[in-house]
Length: 251
Image (cartoon, rainbow, N blue to C red):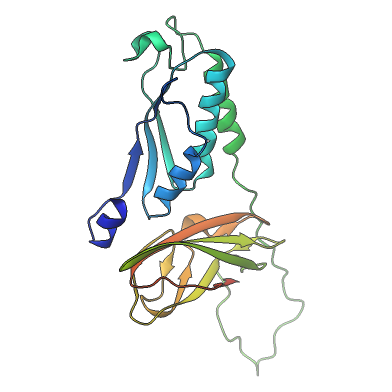
């Protein structure tokens, strides 16, 4: 359905998963893959009504796994637990929430908090290089060719890999950028969109065009990538998706 909506230009921005798990419908091992598959179509994903029946360590493990699954998918941007205390739940007999009927924190609460803390620290960013004042006045016969940069210059190198979902008449491509050993302060990814195809929508990047040779550049919030770190962007299009390995450069 999401592929069909996207292909026809229907404005769909997010998919929510209710996620009511119990012994008859337990937390599935491919839950993270499901989140990622929706995100790969160019939509955000959210866990909108989470409750997991049970108690003790098994319930805590499931809550922690769900939280880590969301944190592992860049476009998973929300988790809503469906109630506060077990007694408030629509499934109160299954004790499916993070607090017991008296409002005490359960093992599940601690598991969620630990998972958030594990995934809540952004990768380190490279400190801007400090400038060194010139030791002499430049010759008057060789004027400067450009103004000094107002932002730190790009550093390091990067690589880019693509993952594509293709269907008849359209596609969604996600691009993962990996910084080199010295990190990035700005990046650009170039690739070729096949003849007859066109980019119709881009997120987390700015595109230089819609067909042929297209370059995607960072936006403000993903300009800096720590050494060895990653960031992602994506785009949707009509026709056949680009293939091969894109070119990634600092700047």
